[in-house]
Image (cartoon, rainbow, N blue to C red; front, side, top):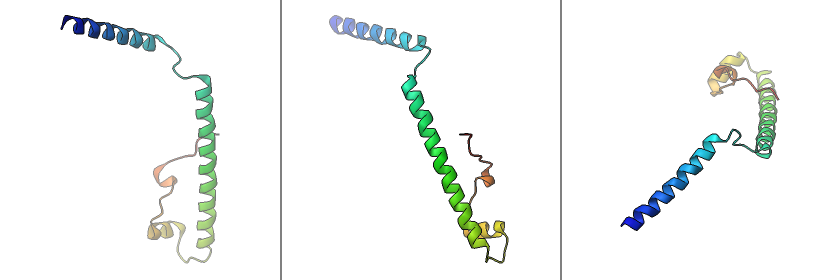
Length: 92
């Protein structure tokens, strides 16, 4: 039992040391990881813009022959826009 307690104390001390090192570190993200995240963000923002433009063009084409307003059309069909929720596209 004493041997087991000693092993657990050693293990706990190791974890405490590891935690102290992690807390002391100022940069937890490598530059490569940071660059990858920025590239992915740019890619997703580009896709968001592209899809938004396509949806806008499609709705504008439908509204050319539609007798009611754009707002009424969106309500009837159930379309929710970014503007309804005050969402803006981030800067590239």
